[in-house]
Amino acid sequence: MKVFVTGVGGQLGHDVMEELARRGHEALGSDVAAACGGLPYVQLDITDEGAVSRILDAARPDAVIHCAAWTAVDAAEEEENIPKARAINAGGTANIAAACRALGCRLMYISTDYVFDGQGTEPWQPDSTDYAPLNVYGQTKLEGERAVAALEKFFIVRIAWVFGANGKNFVKTMLNVGKTHDTVRVVNDQVGTPTYTRDLARLLADMIETEKYGRYHATNEGGFISWCDFAREIYRQAKMDVAVVPVSTAEYGLSRAARPFNSRLDKRKLEENGFAPLPDWRDALGRFLEEIGQRERTEN
Image (cartoon, rainbow, N blue to C red; front, side, top):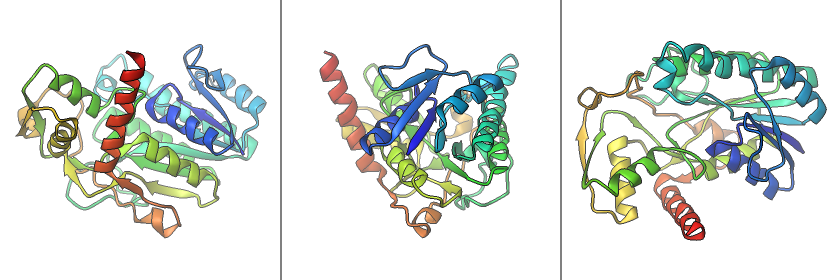
């Protein structure tokens, strides 16, 4: 299978490329940078409709895994950035969808729990239409979903609390803060489940090899936790003596964008369609810490 992957400069896109290569698929990556670490790669600005059409027509993929996105949630709220976030998440996705329609290929779009309002305690269902994004990021990702859902051959995969070796994330932030602080304040009223990009990449590859189209939710297993719970487990596994002080979102402040309190995602549809669930998030965290530890040892 020939698969075109957008956003390979990010933590998920990079791991998707590696997983596809391990399976023997012909994978071609893209991003806005001129080059990307030796991967089979073509430079592409997804907001350029002509370039998207031209490059995908030349590549002739069987499937596209669309990981590229504006993910700076707080920055998206700044007036000068709103058009940029919308151009990437909505307009860029519409360009990818149009090219896939012309080619007749399947499209997988990586979305987010932020398309919902983040209220309540019940896990969000993948086929729910109770959309009510709290911020610009969520609004623009929902606009992208709608462009993708107009196709016949589409997957929409919503994820949450992502961490991987090839980008910024909560785990890396906690590790860095823990090097200089013996106490950290972390919110305890936002609840969800972490998602390790290497585990997610395996699932996405499983899915794109099928025609079991539709909307899905995907995070690691292990139950629902708060960011405070996550931070404590990070420091426990990293063997760092850092006290984690729970605070409410209101007490924490700082964030420009409203955050969802309820990021619980119902993932039963995966197993109902024959896809193996992701491992427990604690196990995933341990493997991630080993992965970045090996990188540090190699670099040093």
